[in-house]
Every structure is written in C-alpha cells, then in structure tokens.
Length: 418
Figure 1: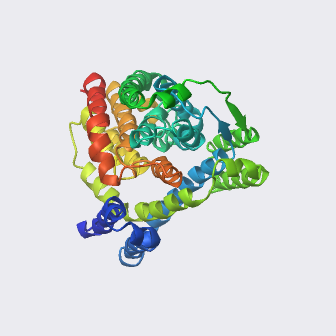
Figure 2: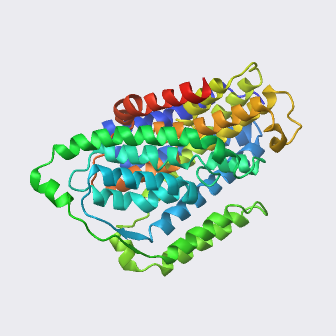
C-alpha cells in the first residue's frame, strides 16, 4: 500500500498543538482539545477507510487503542483507591529512596500502576518545596526507565512477550543497563534536590527532619491490581482480557471508600485527557508508522546503535508500542530468517543484541516527552490538579530532557550499544 506523505500532516499538527497550544492559548486549548484531537484523527481514519479501503489497519489500530486505554484506565482507577499516608515533608535521601522503590514497583505493577500509586504521596511528601524537577524526574524514573525489566513493566515489552520472547529473557540482560540508568538519574536528582533542600529556611528544614508514620488504606485494591496483572496474560478470545480488566476496575471503584477517593483528590479528568489526546495520536500516527515500515524494507547492515537511537527517537513522539513492533520486524528481516520463531532467533547473538537495543530504546526514550508514554501525561495532569508547577511541552524537553536525560542516554549507548 502506497502511503502519501501529506497524510503525516495531521499527526505533525496534533503534536505541534499539544506542544505549543497550552503555552500560547491555554484557555482555548483546554476547551477545544477534544474537538481538535477527534477531528484530526477522523480525517486520517476516513481517508484510510473510504479512499485506501484499508479497513484492516483501522480496525487493528482501534483494537490497540482500546487495549491501551482500558489497561492504563483500570490501573489509574485501582491505584486511585489506594491512599498512602506519608511524611508531609522529606529530605533528599528519602526522596531518592522512594524513587528507587517506584522504579522497582514499575516492573511489578507496570509504569502506569506504579506512577498512579506513588504520584500523590510524592507530591504530598515534597509539598513545602516542590519544584518542576520533582515531577519530571518522577516521570523519568517511575513512569519510564524503571519499567524495563519485565513484560509487565511497559507495553512494548509485553508485546515482545506476546510475539514469543520468553517472560524473563529481558530481565537478566537488561538489569545492568537498568541499574546504570537508575543510579545515574538518582544521582542527578539527589544533586538537584540537595541544592533545593539547602536553600530552604531553617524552620522548613527542621520540620522536614521530623519522622512520621506511613500508613496505607484501601488494601483490597492490591487484590484488584493482581487480577488486572493476571488478566494481561489472556490472549483470546478478542476483548476477553479487556472485559475482565473493566469489570475489575468497576469493582474497585465501587468498593473503595469515598474517604479514600477524597483523600486522593480522585477525579476522572487526568485519564479523560489522556484518552482523548491518545485517541487522536493513535489515529493520526497510522501513516507515520506505515511509512516507517516501508522504509524498513530497504535497511541493511544494521547495528545495535541503529536500533537504540532510531527506536528511541521515534518512541519519543510516537507511541512506543507500535514503534517497538516496527523495529522488531526490521530486526527479523535484517538477518533473513523471519520464518524461524523469535524464541529460536534469540539464540543468534546479533538478533539478541538488536532486541535488547530495541527494548531499551523504546522504554527509556519514552521519558523524553509528555507523549512518549501514557503515564507521563497522567502524572502531569495530576500534578496540575494539585497546583504543582509543571514545565510546558517544550520546556520539558529543553530544560530537563536535553540537559539531564540525554547525557544518561548517551552513557547507556556508549557502555552497552556502541
């Protein structure tokens, strides 16, 4: 199928508006972003259905979107039913410890589950001196990089598992990379947080040094989280997995005490915003992904560096799950033995190195922008609901991704993929 380059324009326009509209005309954007997202998405879908007669790809995209939004929506609802009472004020060492715990939990609950569980306590713990970097580094570590050790951690890795990559295959191979990235990001965060901590008034620092008891309410929702994680492994029939997840989320919402939702300031606005914007993103990115697949057929003599940077850069602005699958196909075709099951291809050292590079690129680079991974926008929305200062789309990249995350990504490349 020939894809016209002009079809990429709605996707580019949507990304441009997501980046700039909240900065230059926020009131208009807050009222009309649903119309913009749905309109641009509809243009692409109508063109594919009525002009290109490509119903199959449209149905496939809609199916992927439903699976995506059902999972992160359910994790948002269930985690919103768990209230963690924490210290009101913390010091840099305690902040580093919580981020490390979040990075570990991301592999057990998924980056969405861990982010939704910890973002509210994180804001509360730092309320006396919270700055934009607190939110950004939470996104870097808990919402993205942390979830690179298991298929549960991030959607691309789960898709790899469904394609035949053994469940624990990525864990041992990615652990040195995960540990290096987490340590570097935590060190950078500690340095920034220490400066902020020392700049506080003595009365605030003295208050921070008090110890308080941690308490968790809504423990039944951990059972619901377990059900959702088990449901993820259901492969057929179509939408049975999503049905189980939806029922579990509804059960969680109606069995959770209202006092817990009130304490968490729980609303559906963050997940609603994510659902609307990603509906447009999923629809408009179809041509971009199709063009990528066409170009992939001409690629030869590839290296882990190629897969790391290209998967990563595209995952920063496209959804990292389909980007992962696209480069997985490129990796299979590059060694010219695509008829062999992936589980057997992994015995090939070259193919194995490609898959690790693709996996790390998809997960790590998802932290580069607010739209690189689903939880990013949700964390931003919750932070804004709490009146926490968050950087704009552009400022996020220029003031945090480039100076802090990019050097870490370069170090990872030099140590493991160069």
